[in-house]
Image (tube, rainbow, N blue to C red; front, side, top):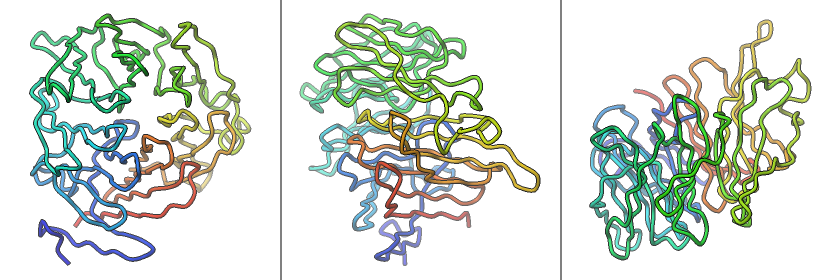
Length: 362
């Protein structure tokens, strides 16, 4: 049957919901979907034509209802407010994005009257957020915006070439944010505090950042030079004492890289859960004899325990992306393989996948 926009067929059953899903994101890039804090809504690019037909869309995972937010413009980045009342999204030219905020109660979008785009970060009270902009001189700026006054509150210059990743982290009880800044290809943790940029790391190999579960530490993951022996390493920055410590995390994780001869050759991506207690990793295993190489996505605890393989696909023409809900209770897995794409939502440990979305190129 036709959907309310009259373009695609939607089939819904008690066991599975099959929908059209737009996936153009390469492995390790920003996720093409964002889960609401209660897990009932997924924001995504839809349909997956790769043309101007794509638009920013809300999908209700319980009813299958589809709601277009911005006609014929695919999202460049999205972020739910912590209370789930607002969805922030940017569309248009990546060099000059236009940002909107969708009010879930009023069911309408409002354009943000400030030059800013993703990645975004929300303050814990859901009344302020931050984004990024490249000014006329090509310099990066961190932009702060208040919903109450509905205006820009601060525009602070940054020394980085780009701010990468799918989100910024708002530091609790402050008006400051943390982010991954890239300079000449090296990725490090930085903060913007009171309009002043501070450098937290200098290793150049940061993959992802998040707050600890109690909100007292900033956590980040660093890549490994040899995943046969060390999968990754985790570090914590105490927001009060401003001291850094290495977190306990095994060099070899049972089920992922237990022995050098059965370990992955590459860590493609790592995504820390916003709740600060879990992470998801995508790794690549080499081919062996007649067995083709595979990309596998695992969910595991921050201690390195409880690793569960959520998805395994052939490496050729594959793309796996993990997207956490803000409360850390749900994990969405995007699986893109050539002319097909899938999305499923799981519990935080990678079990109980309940919703499947499937697209096949006509």
